[in-house]
Amino acid sequence: MKSKYIKYAVAALLVTGCCAVKADGLLDSKRVEIKTALAGATLSETVKTSISLISAASDKDRAAVTVAVVQTVAAAHFSFVPSLISVIGHKVPSMVAIAAREAVRINPEQAAAIAKAAVEASSSQAVAIVRSIISVVPSRYQSVGDAAIEAAPAQARDILNAIAQNIPSLSTYINTALAGNSSVSASNAENILRHAAAIAIVSSQNLDGVQVAQDNSSADSSGKQATSPQYLPAPASKSTPPAPLPPGGIVLDPTQTHQAPTGPQTYSPP
Image (cartoon, rainbow, N blue to C red; front, side, top):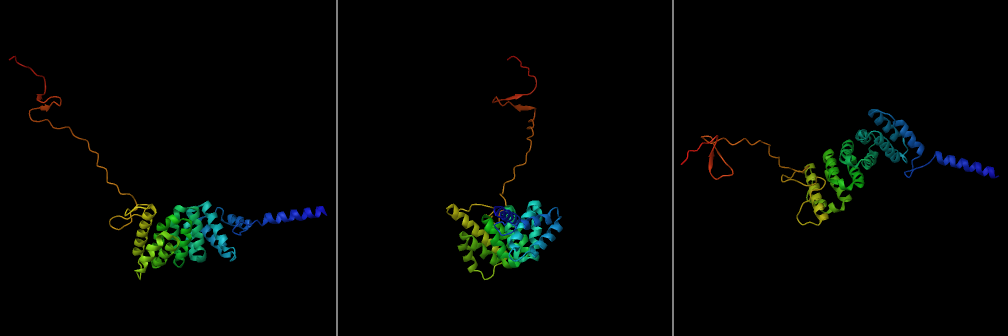
């Protein structure tokens, strides 16, 4: 009887090991399948295989498979990720926000580039994309918002609303600005976002009437965003030529108050 229980216990352990599940509900065996399918693939092969894996997944597993695919591709070649995000936006738009969020989680520095690629591919998902990315990197709301607005100018108002909902410190200004505008162009939306950012920065620093540049959010006097500090050019280096001799070959003796003639001197007795 004891040996029978041992046999059942071993069988249960084997089953558990073969079917280990991560927190997202995806089987380890599925993760291995994804890694194997994408190993050593070129860019075009990676994109094609990734879309096949995501499309073939069940509704229950599709989000988890999308995340696993992005993780696998990013680990091998992060430079492939923007192209992958773009194709997901075209082929499986319901997963593009999830894919973009995971890509930004892996590499926050690429948040704006990923937002632009995702929104360009699927403008109807612009709000979901912006909200997903900002949930990971809230401090990059301005660059993400600008990229999304540039990619889908017709969605500018909705993008601003999404940012206002996710960044409470911006909501009052953005909502007030939008209330006075029946239509919002891309340039107007970028200006609203820029001024909202400046106000939020001042408020967070508890300063009165002082704009603090942070994350390239300041604006110059022309109203354009200042993307880098402005410096005065250094004066050109020039060598100073020696002073010309005055007429008669007389030079000034810097230690005396009188002028001394050059060359050997002879004096006559008085």
